[in-house]
Image 1 (cartoon, rainbow, N blue to C red):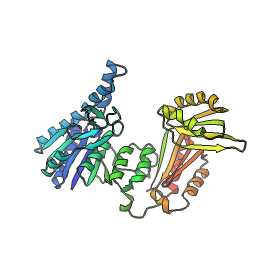
Image 2 (image 1 turned 180 degrees about the vertical axis):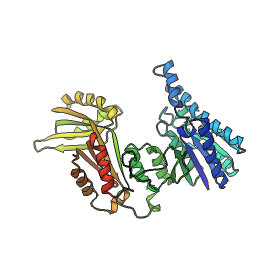
Image 3 (image 1 turned 45 degrees about the vertical axis):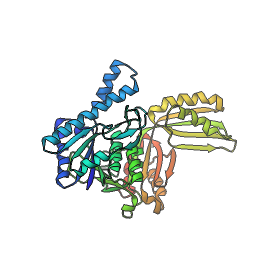
Length: 403
């Protein structure tokens, strides 16, 4: 079996933790498996490096910033290789560029274009362990580039695809995916398996266990991800395709996101192109819009309500106020005290009544629904933030998810 193991910052945060990580690598080798490793920087190291740069220059050059922060992963990769070699294991550390990771030339947000992995495949066949820096590669001109948020997870999945691995094990400080946040619902239970689409929904709703880019890549190439704990030797959660799973319950889990703000622009004359006029400037400002509801009155006026990340609330309100005159809107209203709660499950495709159960449950708890959006496997409502925990607990029980 060929495995790519990825270890996050907490797993390599100290020398003691690096030695524990080496134990995990060594155990897989002892089982007769071929192992490649991808590592993040030691916890806190990337922020330390960014702090050094901003002491030098408030707005440092992006090229040099990528060259600087990429050194964090090089430290943890080399230290892990040193520990493995001390144990008699043939391990070799590689930067992303040395490992053959070719990226676009977009500093701080590069995309992986190719991994030229022939030399890594030969090492794996020989029983050697490549230890590769996550989060980085080089562009066609040889410049170091970083992949942005979720980059190390994405590096690991991409490497697993490139070397034809059987699975990508991602080790973190949690031991799997739960039916909801265990801090809110003590009866939440760990899932043995979850479908790629479900995992994407959980990730997009703020679950920080896996980043969406890595899950999208795994789904595209049908690469199983096994989410595991670095600190406890217990089974984790396997992220895989739906065809590999038994018939499912309607709902697999309940997710939430407090990082939301709602904006309503009122009384816009209803004519073609009005939505483009509203959302064009928001997109130009690099702000992501999520839930959108448009209501058209009999008098020929439109109200448009949408949500944005809470950190973009004030900037979006300024854009909307600036638009009011040009689009002849009556007013703009905002609320930074909302949140999203979602029920997620591929079983929704074959189970009726999910929406009714969700809405009846929230009504019984006195939770008012402000907005609704749906997909094939998800129903999301926007509610007042103060009701999030109540809503999550009630829905978790209503859909039979309590342990």
